Image (cartoon, rainbow, N blue to C red):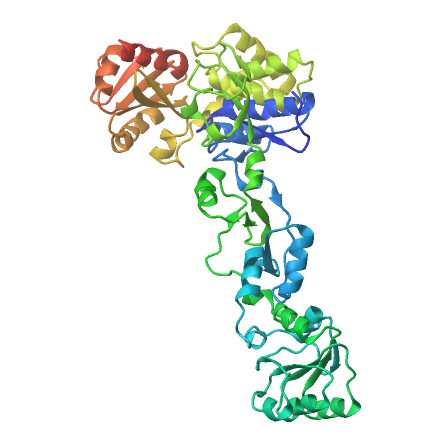
Length: 546
């Protein structure tokens, strides 16, 4: 299987992961990184339990990062690195940049923060709809923008100043008439007419624009300085200047800045698809976790989006999988449970063996690929087998599991009996957990004959602790069970190889009585019941199918 080097593949177990789920994900990711192209990363779909924490700490292995949803996110889609514009840039320059970059929408950003967006449509509308002759003053346009728009040269005055008052006026009339129109701060467009230039200065014009590159006398320049009137020279004629000068207004005046539709890199495509369909923009700004602008999301990029790539270990049922699994591309499934409800769009590598632990299968894969198992990986896989087989006491345990555990223990440098006791005692230390946390520590959902049920399990070597926990779990289940649902919980005593089975929900008591014997009010002691997978679930499904 050839993958692009930079594309990550997540190896992940089921929700409410146990030691097998976590350790197998870590071990299989390590194997894939040695045998396949690509970057394989172990993940977890829930909190690790005390037993697993002990194992990871004992072998000094980092806990996989949590991932709660594997749906395609904005960050999984191509985000265009569209450069931003400064809010003070002129409409003309904005248009030129958009034309050169072939962009229909560009962001306006200040110190990384998105201030607004400007589109080709906005610029076209501005050019067609500008009837306001005071547009430069209203938008506080800098003279540098004016010079750029009309290819002008500042003869008198500071080009860095802003225009704050006055209108744009063409000085085509004679001075007697013109003086009735020129107001304080106006920008007067004129040609080689000394008397009109002088009239503008005398009427306190803010700026005189001399067109067609006409010479400007020393007298006019001196008078302009004395009256704080700026003078600009441009090679264009008056008509061209009149057309171009409004394009010197800054984009901040025309940009959209209210009710902007933006997306986060963390947003799921499934959540924003309706918005993308309703809004007719081509591109949408994307923000990082820090709120800073990081690119544009194009509608077109969704056509080639790359779903997250996933390898599932220790489960093959949709109800147990991480959220968003329908949106991900499943590449492989490695499991030891019954065949479940998982469906894939494409053929996948599927390995399912009737052994007591996924870790046993992973160990086989190391051997089949002639890859040496290092000490840490051996410790993890051995711990997974010990946990899932209850140190070989579970009916799911096979000779293959025991043989694999013994070989892995030698590599890891551990003694199975001693390590198992420490593991189980760490896992049964429940003093710091609420009944809810304990209930969902190792919880899975199942269905059979159109009936849904969930089953959790906790294993301990302490009979007293299990007896004290039973009424707390029963009380929690009574409040947590939903209409039409059944909940079960196995409090398994590893030493006596038996379980107290607590139940809740409509029909649960009758089912338990049929499958496991006459119960007390909400629980029953079942000798020999230690495996949820091989004993409990098959018995429940058998009753439901009758």
